Image (tube, rainbow, N blue to C red; front, side, top):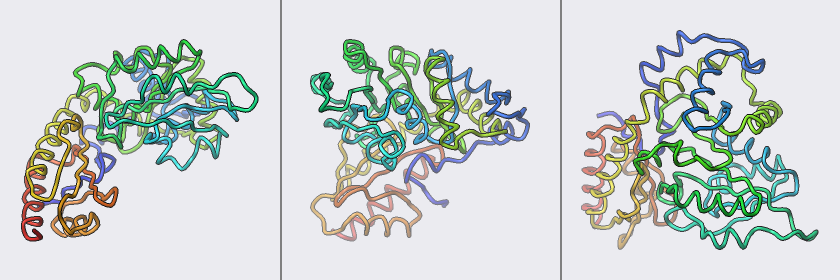
Length: 347
């Protein structure tokens, strides 16, 4: 059978309807704000999230970077989780390019941060300290089992922001996964946040791109920053065309990814030598712990790759698997069969 690629939902390929839309897209110069397809995508995204405006950027990393730089002056500080993607996996960009200091607080397994700790972390007005300028959340939370943050929790953090005159930005790379898991809409989830970004190129299966949403004033500022970072694209409607299809056709099918993740997790947890926190599997990300065996994660990854199953080792005893539109039910069956055989032979 074909390779079962569970390394990430970034490996997804555009659908046939996306490819057709790309070929027939109306194009213009987006830096001049004259690409009609990009304009359509940005308007559609803003409406979907209930925000005034939106901006397409090449990647989720740039989406978070332009957002933080738009909210924060040099020498100020953003409060975010110690497992946040912006802190761990974005090359220190907010510090390197913006001079913004990350103030990290403990992320719990469900992706949340203690609201009291956030309140206490807001700096007093003192020349010894960087000024707190932003609170950042991630939804769903990649490292924290793909956990979705609820509207109740988000609004609690927004209230802290309002009390302290601080904006709240959500890294919503997988916000549609969160909304689907919580049986709500992205508009409802992000109703009260200042800004939000989301990826087109993960579960939504587009080839490239992320989108930032917020007020018209905020988006105008991010547009200028995007240009300075080299993210201004020209006839990029070929990318936006796929994004429009994704927003029309791919959100509901995330339920399939979630169902596949649940079946994968339950099957793995039944294998002697492997353990999954089933209570935390709510979207499309499955973390697997190796227990009571002599195999290390790199050995497991290598052995499964030879059997046509790809995933990552993410720690001395941990594996990570992400279901996506390229993995069908047969791929889940194949993965469970090969893992069962491997651990039976190594017990």
